[in-house]
Length: 79
Image 1 (cartoon, rainbow, N blue to C red):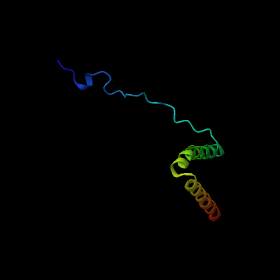
Image 2 (cartoon, rainbow, N blue to C red):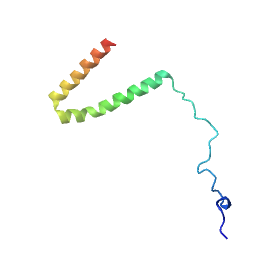
Image 3 (tube, one colour):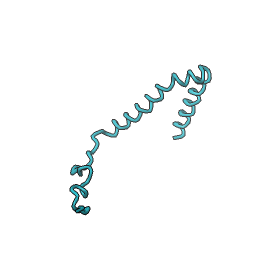
Image 4 (tube, rainbow, N blue to C red):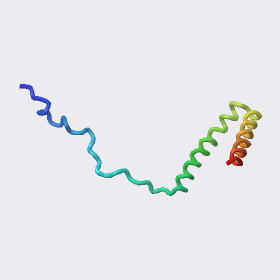
């Protein structure tokens, strides 16, 4: 005789045990979070600069960095 679905052990059991704890709250302050984001962005940019200079060349890459700096400064003044 074949067993029905209710006869199978563990069929209705969840695959993962349910967690009773809620997600832990963060312990970082707003300044620590801000600094972490800034370091992540700057680190990525600094690591990419050698490749950008190799690909574009010294003159073009220098002009693009200068243009990016001027546009950033202008945006800062507007704010």
